[in-house]
Length: 77
Image (cartoon, rainbow, N blue to C red):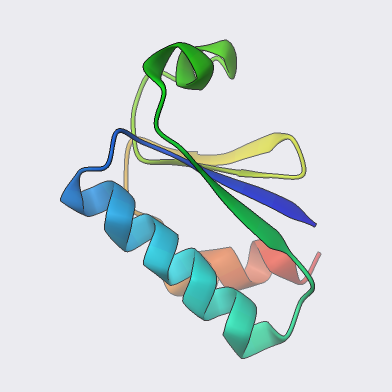
């Protein structure tokens, strides 16, 4: 599983990345997490709000910090 956390490095983006890491540890799912901070690369995903979370190429959340329970449900699918 490949997860990308998109954001310029603000507090909300950092919190989103930490929640993703915590959810991975909690579920034991094999996943890689990539932090994408380049605005041109972020825009290439069609995302204009940050933080955003992409799981296996599918945008799951944009413009807000996702709830940990939501992240867990994305990982378990």
